[in-house]
Image (cartoon, rainbow, N blue to C red):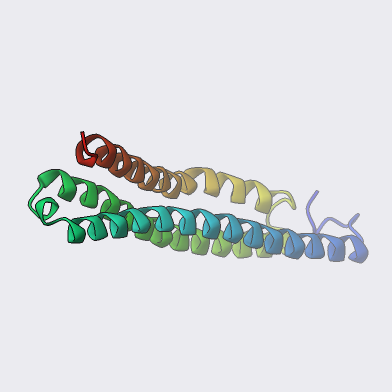
Length: 158
């Protein structure tokens, strides 16, 4: 069914318009909330690891010249940098998704595409681009785990 079909009443058109607006707003809120929580967590654990390592290095003169301590610090700092990349990629992805959503809902309301197409296109777009931010997020978590394992294996007293 296309929104411009003669069998579609004005009331049905209005319901579709409201559904698109409500769906778009919910998607925006849910995605933003989930992304914010994940980004804060990843940044918190990596920055915390970096700060703890720096504090530990500051308290022990011998660690400042220890390459293992610098490896640990590098892993945590890499995690912080990856968190920044996640934020940048998410921003660009969300901008593209919402621009596509706006274009598709406009085309659907003009009868150029089927009413289900905006939702289908949004899902397709997300599957293509969402994997980049997801991979960067997992890499940030891996950086934290790397720093944690390095600290435990190389810096703990034997």
